Image (cartoon, rainbow, N blue to C red; front, side):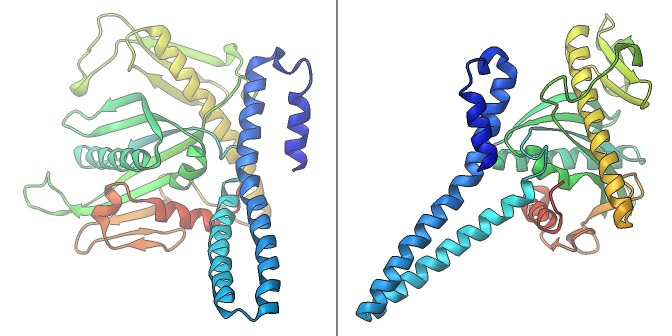
Length: 338
């Protein structure tokens, strides 16, 4: 309540709208806070009303009313449990849209097909949640599938939900590309970053950037543009490299590449802070290729299992069709918002 009062006081000041971007940010923050607070105020009112009804039922020895009150209390506590879950989405950046990337591991077509399957899974999940997906950059495999794809996911709490998906995803199946029908294991790496809302959050010195331009390439490596419209930006201090070739103009590709770079730098800052916290806790978990967060087994049995939480589902087809909310919820329940 103190935070909402503080923002409302800022809004009432005469110079509040002098900075339009900051004002819009504050208005959105206030709206999110009110959405978090209002259900609890409603629960308090409902419980106070039920207290009065309890006194009435007790005075009149009305058993029917008592049963109705018990049923109503159970309903309210179900709602409270649901709202308590939202506390796990109270991290600094959880309310934001997200940028996430999928990179195929070694293994050529098999791994690239797995990366495409993952993208399809997240696309279906996003549609279910009402999020809007915008592909920022994609690199197709020579024979099929995708080598890598970077996507912007627009919607409230997109990052809060998707942060649970960061890490290596492992697939075990009979390969549809193997004439001997052998069992193959494929890997894909998922990156998740919060969208940067303003330039203040991430300061990038232009002198720290190395910008290369080249001709956009299609599947098989052939050039699809006569002019050098594709852009590769290297952030020299961190070594982070970002490429974009989806758009027709060099300017658009550079703008998108800078957007992705900003989010990656912000995520790097978050990772460094979390690393310090984990060191204090005596914990260290690598986010690199060796650390598998989830396995999707299609042969010799079917099961999808999250190795961090132990949560598993035997209907692998359902999971690959976008029904991953159970995995996300279980992860959020077991992790304090950071």
